[in-house]
Length: 81
Image (cartoon, rainbow, N blue to C red; front, top):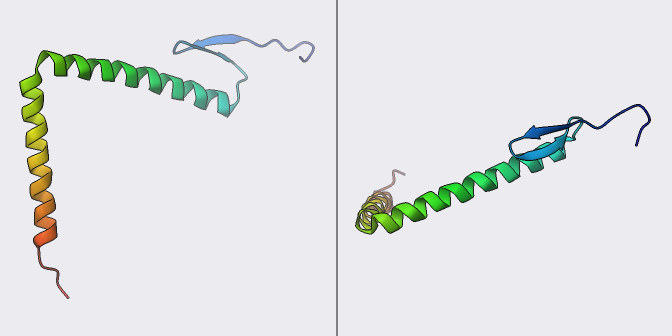
């Protein structure tokens, strides 16, 4: 592109990026990394749910009950005027 200037490729988290890359290139690289990490975590959660369905059900029911109690408390308390 420019005489005398070479584009140097570096390895960044599984993605190749120009050393003189723009901010947009860096953001795209970070987004790709986040996508990969998210996919890994989803697989871990899926595996946990399949291995321990009753524990997952208990955790979900407990969290729902806690959120319901907190929401009920906020909705029924009297407001000062």
